[in-house]
Length: 115
Image 1 (cartoon, one colour):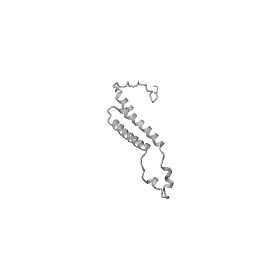
Image 2 (spheres, helix red, strand yellow):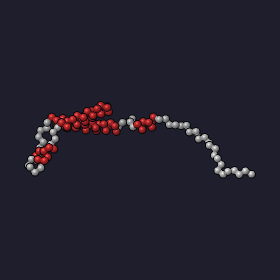
Image 3 (tube, one colour):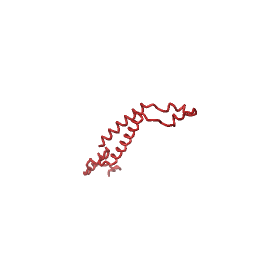
């Protein structure tokens, strides 16, 4: 289930990027919008939405819902997916004690004086 939602999320993200790049921006009219009485182009009514705008809105909704679904699926999973957690869980606990280091003879610190 998680993989299907992830594929839907990736496809909708790529399609959303492509549709946004295909649309003509309204920022080109911003210079004429202020002070020339043509402010309807920037802040006014939108008019009827065309095919690209409607498709972008639908894909944005699909992208948003698939991200919410992925967040819910990953938050409610029971199997650890972290590499460090799986290594810690799968590794057996070592029960043997390490061997003590070999004793090294220690040289006397004061020289012995012959009698």
